[in-house]
Image 1: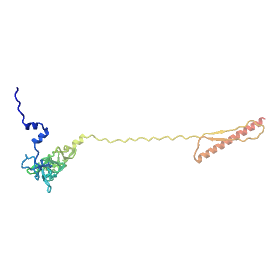
Image 2: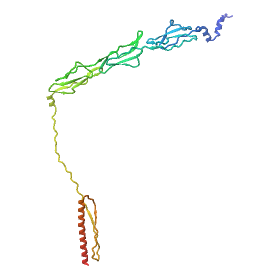
Image 3: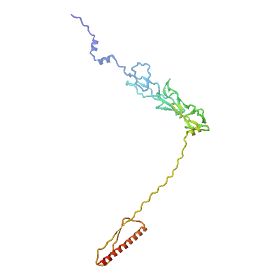
Image 4: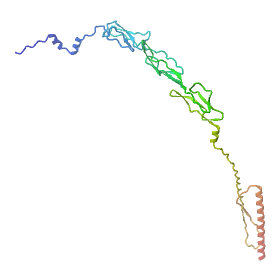
Length: 320
């Protein structure tokens, strides 16, 4: 016979027949009736618990919240919750706002740029007017300091930029000189007697890369005799007389008149026929003098023709 099997206790046989969910319910009993779970989360705040390991809270428990660093409680708003009989916490609205840094103030000859606000975590920047140099921080942040918030850096200063001492010139001097020259101030030069100034008579103090510099080089003073020797003589322009040219007048047009003479054939009678005279002008003339001349010429022509016809008639009659 083989070895006898050990009998399994009845309790274990009972547990083995249960499902896994039922086993979990038996091994992990729920919280006591009327308990609340962990308190709800509140923006920018945290609950103040005496025992952070607590996972459940009985009915009527009050939990108070505290604002996080950099935030401050809004006066008049509730900052706590209560565990109700339905195992739920009472509702609570956000009551913590960001703390505000003090107003940064103004900078002489400069500017403070606030991009968003001056609350906790915000930043501001600084700049100076043209002709001034920034001395100090270029920006500052609203940061935590002890229990409050303060700016991380102090306001800077704007220092006026000074140009270097202007250069002296030979045989000349500076008019009304100053001890220092700042942005946009000018230096004016003049030459001694007998010398002429070559170049710009004044230069200006400008700014480049937060440093003062002059707008150009100073002029020079040259002796008048040297200037006259170096310059060529100016020649006067000569004026040549050009004879005028006359335009020839246009030739006058002549008028040709065509005359038509009708000569009759040999006739038996000695009757003098009428002569018909035709005049054709190829061009027109204006003025009364021209018309009178044409009439005289026509009369003379008519007389000559009449005499010729008469002579031919007499000759014909005589031959017959």
